[in-house]
Image (tube, rainbow, N blue to C red; front, side, top):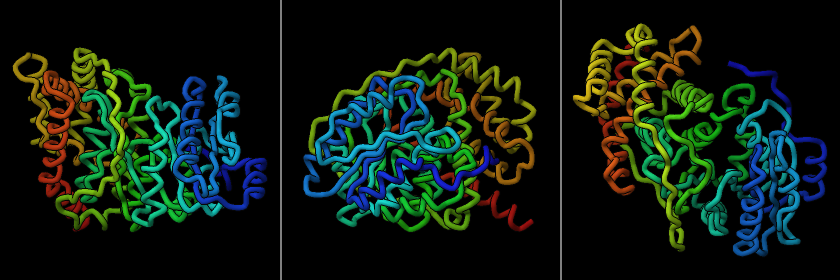
Amino acid sequence: MPLTRQYSTSLRDYVKEWIDQLKDVEVLIGVPCYNNDDTIAKVISTAAEGLAEYYPDRKSAILVSDGGSLDDTREVASKAKVPDNCHLMVSIYRGFPGKGTSLRAIFEAAYLLRADACAVFDSDLRSITPEWVKLLIDPILDKKAGYVTPIYKRHKFDGTITNHIIYPMTRSLYGMNIRQPIGGDFGFSGELAGLYAKTKVWDTDIAKFGIDIWMTTVAINEGFNVMQASLGAKIHNPKDPAADLGPMFYQVVSTMFYLMGEYERKWMGVRGSRDVEIYSNSGEDQKVVPVPVSQNRLIEEFDDGFNHFESFYKEVLSDETFGMLKQTRDDMLSGKSMDFSGELWAKILYDFAYVFQLWNRNRRRLVDIITPIHFGHTASYFENVRDRSDEEAEDYVQEQAKTFEETKSYLINKFKKWEDN
């Protein structure tokens, strides 16, 4: 649903004047930010170092797109060390507050500056290196890709929404093994930036945390060649997966479901998946940072949510799937088993995705009630990989994604019945 009225542009007049003075650039780096005064300088200076090292003869610029930070983010960003020939602009974007609107300003700037290639980096990064710029930009400049997603080495408890919802769903739906569809750090062509900027979605959740999955899904389905860049470890500000997910869960998952409706004709004919080419780094990986977890809290949230939303689950899920979910919950509470099967998890998400298309009531409530089940599935995952290495845990994630592919006929049959009626 719309969040507010759309603005015709997210760029302030002084940013437009900066663009007019520059006229054009070959490479643009964008940094969306909000209250990141402890990390923003490193991100900017490292990106600038990458531009100087790998593209010294190309005209380049960095645009920091701030959401009205209440700390010293803009002041710190303005003082970040950049080479003399690197053009830096720190601005406050116009429009509804959110990461998506922040990126909208970068898309608009890339389009107006006729940039050949653009890369965006999260502002809370602690592990960014100059080579990240090369890895995201080279495939674009070499015309090998129109869109580049990251691959990170992450702790096995980090990125649960990516690992267990967005990755397996995106891979199964669109047939591309893109490991980090919502990684946060991307490369894309000026042409794709123009497409993003012109699309009228900026009064929806895409203006907030839905932006990453929207970018990836649009690139896949609008014919842009996709590559992946191996960036090594991603060290940022991780959160306990048992903590309150806030609005992010709803915004990301609802955007994914919405796009399923938009691109139904694309994914209905897709079976299996193919690997996506990886552009690798040459340096040594940094060590990942362990992520704290509260498994007992996850189980409690699962139980509380099930008790509260049981009638909704009966309405949304098929009888067989609901029965399997109830048995799984009972087994976890009794200590009999911590197994939450990949097939059950796939069918639950497929049921919700299907009902989302038909739901005439509050879609936010529909998506929010997935959260307790997500907690239950996450608790099971933690139990299964507790004593495994990060690499062995990744094998578990891959097996689950394969199960989503094998179970896709369950989703397709639901959509076919809907169309027949």
